[in-house]
Length: 436
Ligand code: UGA
Image (cartoon, rainbow, N blue to C red; front, side):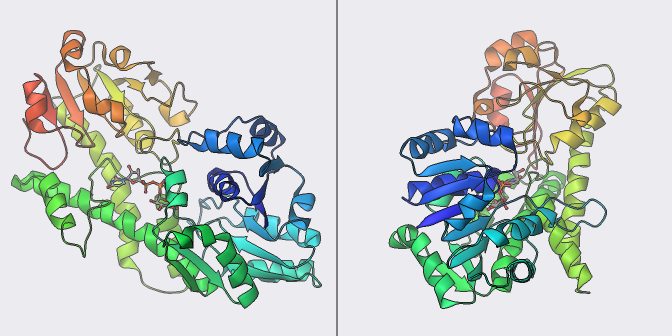
C-alpha cells in the first residue's frame, strides 16, 4: 500500500515516519523547498525524541520519501492524508481551514484509481464532508472516498503514542474506505489497539471533545491548587486521591502555570467558536480558555509576591521556556505571558531551557538566554521553574547556594517536595501546598 501525506508539520512528519516503519511506502509532500531539501538529507526541523532516527532508518531503507511534487505523490497513492496546519483565526477563534481546502483542490486533479482521502489535521465538524465536496467539484470523475482520522499524539512522546495508541478513530462512509483504513492500521489492531469506526462528524468531534476535556481537567486542577493553598491542603495528595478513583484517572491532574502548545488552546477556542456558530450554549467550554489565560497572569503575580512583593531591579532565573518538556515548541507557552509581565514589573530575566538557545519571540525581548543552569542562576534573587524538564528535578543546590543572591525556589511544576527544598537550604514556593 502506498501512502501520501500532505504537510510535513509535526503531525504529518511523525505519521509519515511511523507508517513507513509499519512497512508502507510513504511520500511526504510539502511546498516549502528548504524543508523538503533538509528532510531529504535527514535534517528534522522539529525536536521530537526518536524521530530523527526513525526518518533516517526508513529513508535509507527506501520506504520514506520527501518531495514538493504533490501530483506524483498523489497519483501513485492508495491513501492520501491531509495533515496541513489549522491555526486559530485571530478575529473569530475558529480554525483557519484555508490550507486544508487548498490541499484538497490541488490533490483532486492528480487522483488516479481508487484513493482514500483522509483528513488528519484537527478540523471542525463538517470539514471532511466539505473536503469531499471540494474534491468532487474539482474532479467529478475521480474515484475516491473520504475518511476522518484524527491524531492523539503528544509532543515529546509522539512516536510511542503513534505506535501504542489508546485507540484509533476512523470516520468512514463506505466499506471500501473502511477496509483500506483497516489494512493501514492492521499492525496496531494485532496488538489489540481498539479501532473505532464511526461517521465523519463523530470522528471529528471526538478529537475536539478529547482535547477540550483534557484541557478542562488541567484548568480544574489549577483552580483546585489555589483552593488547596487557601486552606492548607496539599494538591499533590488531592490529585493522587482523585486519580485513584478509576472514574477520574490520574493523568492530566498535575497543576502548572497554565496549559500551552499548539493544540489545547487552539482546539478549546475552536470548539467554543463552533458551538457558538450553531447557537449551542457551552458555558463550561467558554470558561476553560478564560481560566487558563487568567492562570498565566496569576502565576506572574505569584512570583512577584514570593519575591517580597516586588521584582523591581531584581534578577530572576527562569528555568524552562517551552510549553512542556521534551519539545522545542514555544507555541502558546505560558512563558510568553509570564515573562513580559515580570519584565513590566521591573525584573531582569535570564532564562535557561535545554532546547531554546536563543529566541526571536517579540514577547521575550530583553530576556537573556543562558547556556546552562549555573549561568542563569548567577546572582538571582529567585529561581523559577516554568517547564518540567527532567534536569530541573535534580538542581545542584549545593553549588547554586553559593552563586545566587537569595536562596529562593519558585516551583510552578511542583517538581520538588517542600521538605527536600528546605533541607537543601532554599525557601520554597510551589503550587497548592503549604509554603516553607
Ligand atoms: C495534546 C494532547 O495531549 C494529545 O492527545 C493531542 O493529540 C495533541 O494535543 C494534539 O491535538 O495534537 P500536546 O499539546 O503535545 O498534546 O501536549 P500535552 O502533553 O497534552 O500538554 C499540553 C499542555 O498541558 C502543556 O502545557 C502541559 O504542560 C500542560 N499539562 C499537561 C499540565 O499543566 N498538567 C498536566 O497534568 C498535563
